[in-house]
Structures are given as C-alpha cells and as structure tokens.
Image 1 (cartoon, rainbow, N blue to C red):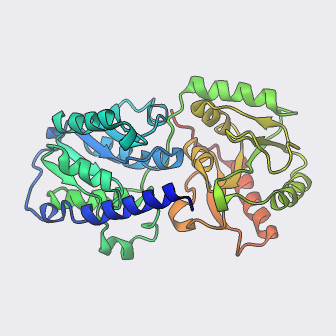
Image 2: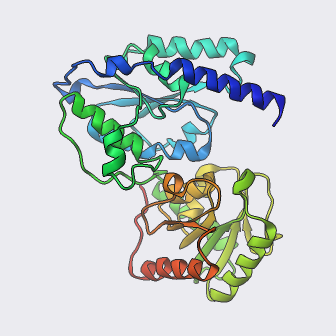
Image 3: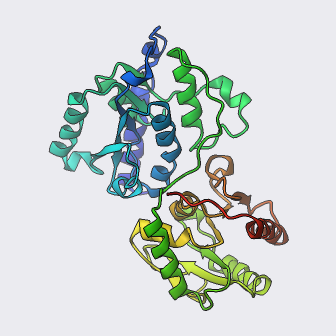
Length: 360
C-alpha cells in the first residue's frame, strides 16, 4: 500500500471516529410529520463517485419520490457520473459534487458546504452510516427532519435481504419514517433502474444488431474485467468462454469492454466498447443475459433490467448480488462450473416465456 493510501485510510478512520455519533441524540427526539406534502425539498447524501454505488441508491431515490410525491431531490455525491445516471429522474433537481481531492480544491470544497447550508431542505438523508461526509452534510443542513442512516438492529434479524447495499438504506429509511408517525411500508424494494427511454432502447438495439453475427439469435453478453482481486484470471475466463460457446452455440456471445479496453479472453468474441454510460446501458438492456464479476458494469446491466449473473469470489454476495429480472449472484468458490450452466439455463428458459420489463 502506498504512503498516500495509508494517509487516506488513516484520515477516513479519524473522520469516522469523529462523526459516528453525530445525530444520534437528535434521532430520538419526538418529532411528528403530520403532512407528507410539507416535504418539498430533500437532500440525499452519498458522497461516492463510483458507478456501482450511484446505481445502488436508485431504489432509495425511487422510495423517497414515491413517499413524497411533491418533493424534489438534490443528490450530494462525488465525481461526474451522477447527472448521467439520474438523467431521466424528473424528481432529481440537481447534483452537488464534493471534490475528489478536497485539500487541492479548498475553495470548491467550501462552496459545497455553503450551498448545502443555504438550501431550504425539509429533509436530509444519509445513505451510508459510515460516511463521515454524509453524516456531516445531514448535520450541516438546515433540514427539520434529519436521518443519519444508522442501521436498525431489529430489521437485520427480520429481513433476509437486509444486508444488500441497495436495500438496507430503504428499510432503514422506512423505519425512520415510522418514528415520525408514518405507517410502516412492507412493499418490495424497487429494482436498480437507469430509466432508459424508448429512444435509448431502440438505439441500443441498433448498435447490438451491428455487433452480433446473427441479429435473429438471442444474445449473451460477458464482461471479463473487474477491479483488483475481483477480476478473474485470463485462464479462468478462457475456460469459461470455451464452455459457454460449446453450450450455447445457437446464441450470439459478445463481450462488453471496460474503459481500459482489455479482454481476459484475448478479444475472441465480437466486442462492444463505449465510454457513454447510458449507451452501454441501452445495449445491455437488449441482450438476453449478462455474465460478469462484481463491478459497476454488472450493476449497470442490472439497472438496465437485464437478467444478470454476478460472479463473486471476493466481495460479499449478500451485499452486492444483482436482483430482480431473474438475476442471481454466484459464489464461484463454492459453485462448480456445471452449476453455472444450470443457473444460466434456468434464466434463459424463463426468458423464453417472459418478456422482462424495460424501464421507461
């Protein structure tokens, strides 16, 4: 680990220690929300710029929008991807961006906090209780109702899917609302959703038809890359791809490439490469199955409402596995190759009987 990484880890640890108790006494105050229509401005804090983490808060954004239909949402994030991910979310008013390197952008850094303080928010929500910046933003806001994202011990025992990073913020938010006097919701948590338009879906189909050898056939898309230890070796992918071709010779098999433009199978399959996140999502929305390791692209496929097989060997399956649209996470340390194909067969067979809904 580099010296800079060690310093950043130390800084994060110190900040978490300093902010972990922020807001806890206030969440116990007896405040009642009499009329939901009074919530018109909401701040959701997830100061993280990774594609996957932004897509994983789309269920919470949908939950807040449904709970408070008259509200507009501001997102406190990092990076430049949030406006792209939430482009078709009419409920999202704007995104507030925290600089990636605060000490090198002190003026911009201070402007962010001033803007949060100056906005007349009615409610502020922190997504991740371990985010010091998220907790500070909620504390710093002038919102009457403040939720710091603290975990609910009772829910961890009663909800079998509580550990999922896209779901527990929704469950915790619902619990917080009951403390404000609102009835408890037991609805199924929404799917990840990129909200692709019909025009985007049509464009994705056109692009896919140009890539595939036979557009009349169904298509399987693989993504052979991932960051760090989550990335499977070239040998693993070579073996998997060889068996995939043999088993599904009547399917088109294409590979979507990462921004690094590398392939763990040596570019053997027809490839698609783009830096346009929404275009990538539109292409993925038109394939019949996506297979790839835990990554932002895996979550993008899930948010495109495409049946997704997520391959897990390092990260927590319960926390990050794709869900809905027939999707499933596979622990490759425990699952034998034969079982992979039984899972794939099951998803594809269901796909013959069911048209998976596309987000509009």
